[in-house]
Image (tube, rainbow, N blue to C red):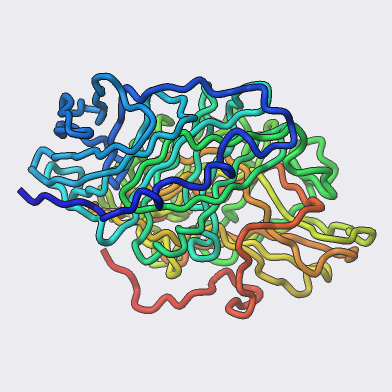
Length: 505
């Protein structure tokens, strides 16, 4: 039996600076406290986010019952404050160890963690991927001075190295979040200075420093938010609702594709669209996705913009995804293939926005939902989501941001049908708030325009649910999302990478 510790870690590196992460640090008096709890149950997922069933677990020398079908096992007596070694023996005999750090502020009795094990197509033979991947977990509670905050947006970013946020969670009814981390080992240094960002409606956003260490789980990393606005007063606000004075002034432009209609279009609540690529077996849902393949309703009101196909038309477009015209010879678990070897792409462009009387730092934020391919979530990525601005009424454009993470997670599975979403690799997409994107050189201009571009880059793995945008705001705040290097971009096109050798299956 191959017995192996993931890393020889000094205990001093395991815990973040708790003065920055605890319930303190707010301008409000801290009157609400988390009731301490020992961990009674742990759910173990593989690096692929699948439950690890039938594993034998030893925690600090005490063997627990094997994990059940959902990867859950119970701990006799519970895990109290301190460092604990969890030794995991898979059903095939593969052994790895994970260090669990329980802080004095832990309030969760049940946590979910990732193990550095991956298998081919959810098989029973696992491979230790701790040498090639950073696998870690962090959880805690988001609260105010008066109580827990349900529905808060909690994300982790490695800065420019990961192109910002690469994993996101929404707090549950107990105010708890759980971030699961699977990134390429080449990003280890960048994750030593990563950032956890928490935001919620009615509260000021807050960022804390966090050091990600391979093979560790930290629980009880709590974040207190102060009442107020997380976006301030909007200088421009678009909800796409029927009564919005500018909703009819947004323009959609098809750049490439076989479909006679541009993929960008108004998506209305109650349309009940199901992703047919999922129904037909070309793509899969993430293990934590309970949507049955449904395209979500708008998050604000009844209308949002969506890059995806709404109906089956004469060009053979498949609804609920961005395949465009579908390849008739497509096969099961292909990821969904567009016809004629073509990519598809398009722009959604704002009306002219007058910011002539505005000075200081400006940022863009919006609600977003996206689900794309997971085959290439790196600097040579596909299904690109790009944002550009113009300060001269659309004559020239400057690329300012791209949403695609550069985490390049490690998995041995066939990734063709597996999604990457705004919550992470092989994780269910959700509506979330986009981190503030800095807007440069537009303050004082009366001819500001913004456009959102989606580009599949090629015809492969296009059977996912695409990109949805709602509740767009320009605000007087400093942006924190990594800026896109404008020098490497070409204005007027969505493509900014070298395709190189065409991909094949």
